[in-house]
Image (cartoon, rainbow, N blue to C red; front, side):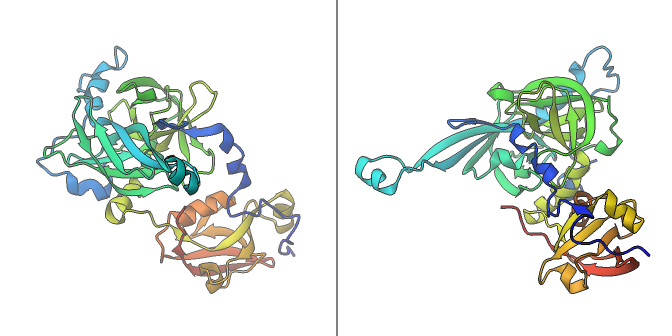
Amino acid sequence: MPRSPSPAGFWSSSLLLSSALLAGAAALFAVGTFVGAAGGVPVGIRAGVSADSPPAAAPPSNFNPAYSLAPLVSAVESAVVNVYVTSIQRTGVPQALQQFYGLPGEREVKGQGSGFVISPDGYILTNAHVVGEAKDISVKFSTGEEYPAKVVGADTASDVALLQIIANRSLPWLQLGNSDTLAVGDWVVAVGNPLGLGHTVTAGILSGKGRNISDQLFEEFLQTDASINPGNSGGPLIALDGKVVGMNTAIIQGANSVGFAIPSAYLQTVVPQLQKTGRVSRGYLGVQMGTLNETGRKQLGLTAGVVVVGVTTGGPAAAAGLKSGDVILKIGGVPVKDQLELVRQIAALTPGTEVTLAVMREGNPKDIKVKLGTRPQSP
């Protein structure tokens, strides 16, 4: 009879986060630019779209990309903005030197990135790392119009921020498309503010899907060879129908034509929460875990599974009776192959949701119902 895995030899990476996710972190950086320092519409937005609102930007019906992308660019660029931020940064000068020599304890830092309008009443998406802890934010359209902006909500875990401006007019806007239907090889266009040059357009194809980069847990990035540079952060990646399929977010330092965008399918799950509460709440189980290695899978007669190697005291898993040594096979009937997939499945659920875990305990199948808690916010 199969037996439960021992604490050693049957699993690997007994971490809350997979160590593999962190391996490439040093080679990756987000693509906002800083000056003076190194370096379908979401449901929640429907309130800003009425029968009297202008339609989302889209290329003309006779648009033929085989001849030129100009009609597409002309249609969408008016809804893309340059984002300018001002932050206060500590200089690190000791207080005594500040007092006696008049040296500054703080300095003003300017930064910039990109963004795009997603509703005619002024909601704008950009990356959370673009706005950061900015004290002042403004956005500038291709027409030269500039408006102060406020942060409605931001989520550092997914690097998404929602801004709003008051323009006293209906603004041109872009519709979020369905990135899940996008295929590798499809044409895409990136629009943004690279290197502070202002509105710039590049084109390429979708190079890959489901990319895991750095320590981003909650989304799998789109990869494109459309040129993306510092300052493009927060700008849209647009399909040939004029809909946004991703938000340009990161590049690999030293690589050519390798850029990454947050898929629009993921944005649509995050934006409504940011508009409603200013933050994103994710489900939380409260376990430390490891993925079954080949030895463990053979011993237990399983093809996949996640081993519980620790249970957080007072957490949802502990309250439900989950134990070290349990192997989680399914969440709500959906199989899980590794710990990253488990974290993402749990995080996608609303806190307070009761979910059934199919587990293997000491060689016997068992269903355990867990009421999920709220995942602690990223710092």
